[in-house]
Length: 118
Image (tube, rainbow, N blue to C red; front, side, top):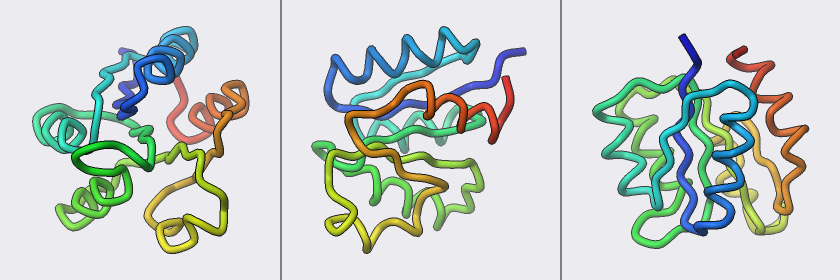
């Protein structure tokens, strides 16, 4: 059975690109558009990993991750961001790892595989 990844990304092109890469690496993917959908989907389905954008409408990735952690989530969460390291220093500890945009997808999915396998 394929490992499942939940992707939260508000930019349609970026969401599609991450989804394609994940599927090409053999993962089953559910993609949502913001932190609210991330929380709703996570509460009803099981995932092996979450990839979230930091800045999204309605609820950002850092806030959604904090809520999940308060609910006992132990699923690894990887953040993607266009912010600089200086701009995100207050939220770095919420994530397993942060990748900066533009993202090197080979590096991202090598890291994903090191966390959860295939």
